[in-house]
Image (cartoon, rainbow, N blue to C red; front, side):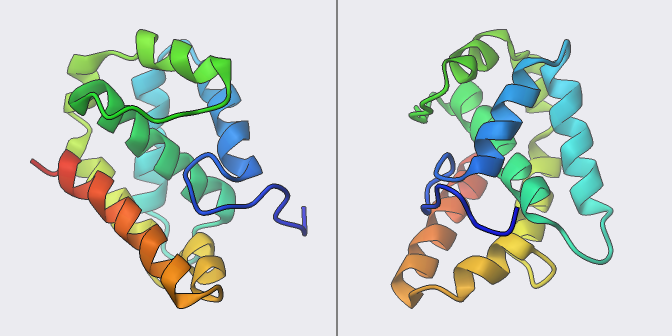
Length: 140
């Protein structure tokens, strides 16, 4: 919709992310879904919409939590189930795609980046630093 709904600068502070958690939870194969989101984003030449960017961010956090034991505090009970069911070995193979997709959502073609860059500069920098932290932990 037009309004941002519940909006903050954390990964789960917006409706799009919460919607994606539910969608991911319903998948038979979590890593396949994550891979398809990353590839869709990397191959997008024009514009990465908010829902796609949120899905990339959530997916990267799932990888970060499963591989690096970084605990993301998601309010949705479905999230914990995703973490338990996700296949660590499959997620390890997606690290490079995760990094590329995160770079895409920080780029000029990202609606999420555009929206947050219109906010307070400090908020924008904090948001960007948060994503870069995830990126750097995965990119090892």
